[in-house]
Amino acid sequence: MSGGVDSSVAAWLLKEQGYEVLGLFMKNWEDDDDSEYCSTRQDWLDAASVADLIGVDIEAVNFAAEYKDRVFADFLREYSAGRTPNPDVLCNAEIKFKAFLDHAMTLGADYIATGHYARVRSIDTERGVQHQLLKALDLSKDQSYFLHRLNQAQLARTLFPLGEIPKTEVRRLARELQLPNAAKKDSTGICFIGERPFREFLNRYLPTQPGPIKTPEGVTVGQHQGLSFYTLGQRKGLGIGGVKGRQRDDGTADAWYTARKELESNTLYVVQGHDHPWLLASDLNAQDASWIAGHPPASADYAAKTRYRQQDASCTLSSAQDGQFALSFEAAQWAVTPGQSAVVYQGDVCLGGGIIV
Image 1 (cartoon, helix red, strand yellow):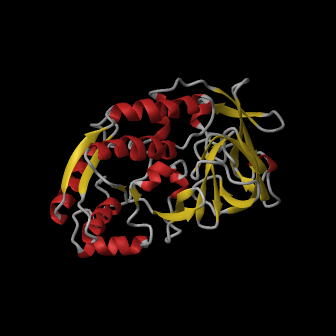
Image 2: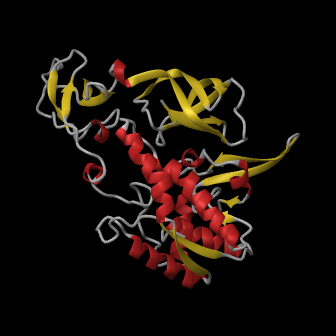
Image 3: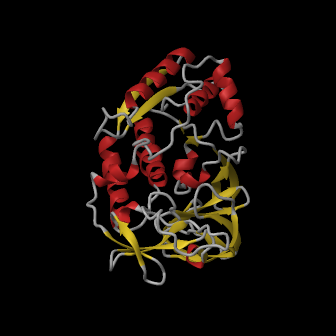
């Protein structure tokens, strides 16, 4: 129970279904807990108030050391290497469905449950019972992308009470139950670290290494603060707003976008126009693959997402072995970003995925 409306309603639903529910509040970040961006104290008060109202016990657990070792260290390594990691994916695999799951099992729990929007389906196969991860029925809130690294053992012990409920219904239930956090806005930002000025935050952990910002033609149009602080497709915060570059017939100019990072020369390349060829990719390679079934799917046609907020894109999967795979897309994908996750789907079933290289 995070203090948010989703996990609060999930706990109430499970109690209504006859489960014996114990709330666990996870504290995973301590570096600047007194800052305006870390809402841990308020979140704990909200979670405890909800637990009291719906009649479940709650306890706080501290996984800050595990988070720092398993998630944040990797997060900084990836940024240092010029890639853009997705900490939510690793946080789910290492903290919410590993450290939290292990703790729950020591308490004698049969299952863990979260407020994620996703579903689990168990089917009988020749290999025995197979647990599948499915998209939520409310596709606008589906979070299977962030859960694609879960394995059979984790899914066997996981419940997603909100998987078949639209978000609007969750809000309605919260109001009806008069939950103290019924109107609380959804959390965004980095998993457990919260919303904060990102460049300023990274600056505390990574050195600034200024270098040139260049166009594909090699023209220097500005200076960047360090490649770690930029991501492919980024439009705002480049600091080159006054550079006109190529102009249209009406005298206006296309916007600038981050298109490439060259670590060897510490150069950031920018292009003009949303559909510049440097921003489009028809194929990708991924590594560190994790497949929910425990083995790679057959080479065939599937769909995939290369970022959370996008439609499924038709693609062909190939060379899925030794923790690697390749995807070829029917239509070129925009700003395919090293460090992000490529997640593969077969209809509503999330098959798994890997890290884009």
